[in-house]
Amino acid sequence: MNRLVIENLSAGYGAVAVLHDVSLELNESEFVALLGTNGNGKSTLLHAILGFVKPTRGRILLEWDGRTVDLTKLPPHRIVNEGIALVPEGRRLVPNLTVEENLVLAGSCPRARNDLARNLAFCYATFPLLRERRTQRASTMSGGQQQLLAIARALMTSPRLVVIDEPSVGLAPIVVAQVFEAVRALQAEQNLTILMAEQSFFQAVDLAARAYVLSHGRIIRTIDRSAGSIDPEDLRRAMMGLEAA
Image (cartoon, rainbow, N blue to C red; front, side, top):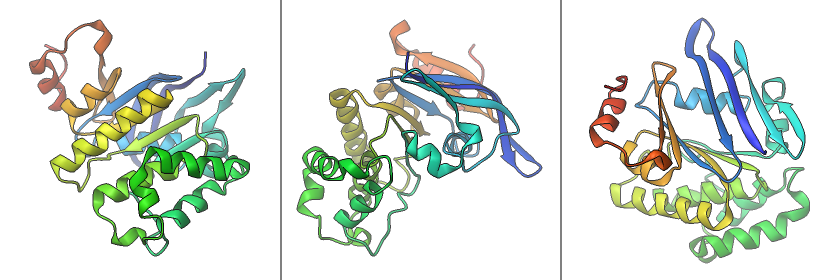
């Protein structure tokens, strides 16, 4: 089985501990949400997966195609080359480059270089707006358009797994709905494996097959839509960082 496994992970910044014994798994073709309000460790966990934060304890294992790689032992560029792509909070595009230049830059990484033309065609077919605006500078696009470009940039790396950090930040509700729908359609049509951190609980749960709730750096709840309907009151308690009643 192809999957990402996080085992008893603890991490933080210097003397400040943020994550405490976090364990979760993400199977191939799954859409899993990581839920929690600001300051509860979602971004820290994603940054640990990408190698930007080094854990003090635990492992992050990529089990894929018969190989097992401990990502905690690799620098970020090696993790990208293993097939993990990040859509960062705030998009973080290269503002003075055009849409196409941003995409080509991402697609020039060693893992995806030979597939650059194919990946670019795929991104344009998936997001026709980006084809129309391929010569436009990223900084002049709207927030929603930039978010689509950030997602397409991740796809240019030929990822096995896409990690999306807070895609709703800074966007109007109607634009958030459009971005979420684009992510949902992409995952359903391409069987992408996606881990998405988000504080919009209800919208994220509607998208994901499973969800983990982080509170004070610990996973306090696992929500599985296949287990039946989700009690709105239970979800509200999770939003407040409370254990199940």
